[in-house]
Image (cartoon, rainbow, N blue to C red; front, side, top):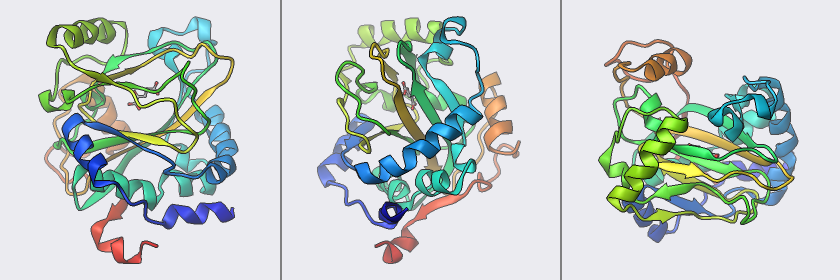
Length: 276
Ligand SMILES: O=C(O)CCC(=O)C(=O)O
């Protein structure tokens, strides 16, 4: 596992990318992990995904959301190798520096494997699900395989995060229809950063409106995502069924208003001196 040592090293962000992220609410970081590291880790994430996936129906038997990807959460708990990778300081520091916050905590990680013939990912905003009293939330989306143009990455509505909650829509056919019309009517510019090499990553804010195309190829689009929130954030109201579920799943049913400090701190600026 010699390549994994790079996960303790610092990835210097280009200041232009930070500026771009702060305006648009998304950005790409190339070669955030090297191909060698990803090649070592991918079989372990594959195992974790197959063992922890929560929907085991065949592709044809699933709804639009289910056809978008095989989904497995907190794969870092599956093995020390996946834990080392998913909770890497290198990735968390990029998340903190993009947001401009002192530290970030793990909300949860998630493998999103879009199968050969898998469907599109409907338009949605992630933060609708999260009972967190902060807008400083961010997701890293890292392909573990090369993702060619035919599959592509997510499509982001530029600067949409500034509007915060654009409608209480959880991901599905209704969110897709609603947000597709909204994107058209409000004239949001759209950006995508593909194709990708394994180990490239995009980062997007919790309120950034996004979707992703289907997978028309015969290869699996294996992606690991890690969701972070600013250290010091408080638990928000669980005033939607999706947020009630998330409160139980990822925040231990903590009381709204209390510090959301039960999840691990993955990077803090006071650690910078010990980053290699
Ligand atoms: O991987 C996808 O198709 C969508 C991922 C996504 O929506 C997310 O990471 O927030």
